[in-house]
Length: 156
Image (cartoon, rainbow, N blue to C red; front, side, top):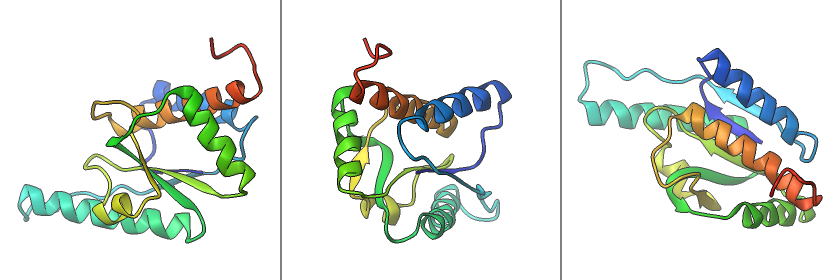
């Protein structure tokens, strides 16, 4: 499962995301969950507004993910993995019959409770990525993991 805040606004980027999510679904059962992004209250300080946005988005994500899934928080400060290690992680979780929810926060990032309560924090890049780009990178890597597991030529 990929659980993300917001829908891609740029149509070309949205098409690329859909393409890789469709490709990835050939290898893994994938459910896409998009929750509404929150707007910051302009009457509060920037920090308080950002914290409130993250909290509200985190609640929405948690409600939609459910309690059974293992949460992987996509976070720049998380663990870096090679594509091969990521493929192994997905295969291991599949063999255990675990549902995995990859969670991507909105413009202000992920709520601390959701991020800190995750079974794994995964870095998609050492940089902070816009959430739409993070979703594209994640979808491509899930697809790539399927090709690695099956020994297909996509991953060279």
